[in-house]
Image (cartoon, rainbow, N blue to C red; front, side, top):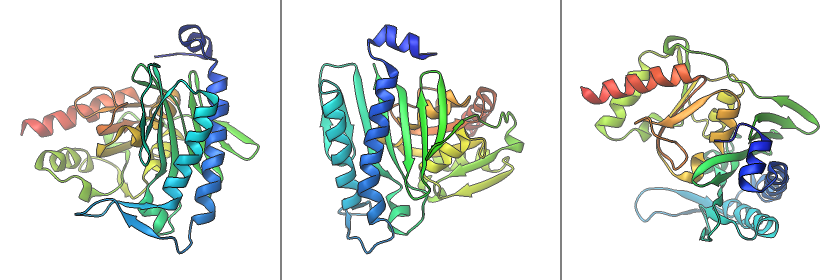
Amino acid sequence: MFENNEQFHRETGIDPEAIAVTLLRAARAADNETLPRFRTKITVDNKYSSGFDPVTKADTEAERAIRAIVETDFPGHAIIGEEHGNKVTDSLFAWVIDPVDGTRSFITGVPLWGTLIGVTYAGKAVAGIMSQPFTGEVFLGLPGRAEWRRGEERQALATSGCADIAAARLFTTAETLFRTPAQKAAWESLARQALLIRHGADCYAYCMLAAGHADLVMEPGLHPFDIAALVPIIEQAGGAIAAWNGGPADNGGDIIAAATPELLDKALERIASSQRG
């Protein structure tokens, strides 16, 4: 949507560097709530009356901290949050928050969870951050650039360039999430061809794709807050991401991310073929 900072500033009236400052401040505030609670005997509640969708005080307090900063810096912007609901405004901007993406990883001591904060403009994800405070890593996507940070270290993100499914490293959180026959068929259409398969990485898998260490990530049934922050990171690193039907990924759904547009096209064709029987 926006190729660089200048175009973003011209069309929205907001300096994207101001967005970046708020993303980083909000992520640090969330880190202060999540990291001290990681690998502790934290109370885990269940959002569902049937099934299991865990939530902890790390989730709720991290989102509260993020929202406080966003509402201070951009009080007129909308907010979409997993734990504390939505703030509706007339703004074309919305901040989309998943305070702990991968709560199952969080409560089992696995450092593959992360805080996701995305920024959308007119429904399109235009900026985003993933913060993993246990490893000290930040993945940032802004108009015209994507970068990895750890402390004072900085490195531009770039995907692997893979364009062949047979050479692709395919990630998903869990194969059990592919529940319907159509979802299972779609998954198998890629899993049968991929070079290798890895599980359980949650948002970290998408960031590994942006960093060149994974080539495909496939997941069903995502919410907007699961993916909005990751879309700009992937796209600005040279990757491509879409819904399985080829539509935009910004609002969630069944999602496929790829290291290159060419690989995405091939994956989408395999998925489409699997649905034709």
